[in-house]
Image (cartoon, rainbow, N blue to C red; front, side, top):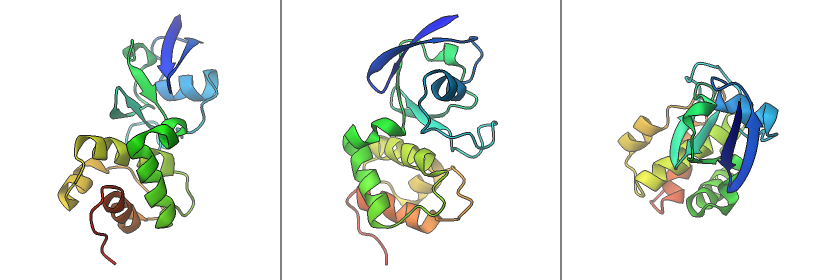
Length: 154
């Protein structure tokens, strides 16, 4: 079946089965490889993208559920006002180690800041459920605080 998807502001067609996860449609059919495969069961968050601004785990999100929604991936965050701040904070604080999970982390952080511009530590804990095997959680929290304009603890 052919789906018309609005990905990063560009309408693209994907001829895939309706149950195909959005992750595989993005990566294998459309060549958008920023979202990563991690676990395949929506636990790790490496595949996080935005669907109409909400963070979703694309490894279990069927392409048929997208409809007319706008899909945004890490590739579009440099042009997103909040995403740009998040990416700058990530670089400024050297958040990434191996970097594999970071596209998903940045997507989750951007969605959090769009919903709660000045998140508390509890807000960050609730929203940032992505797994980082390098355990850069302290730097992730600091980068989110910095991107929101809040003081960063040393």
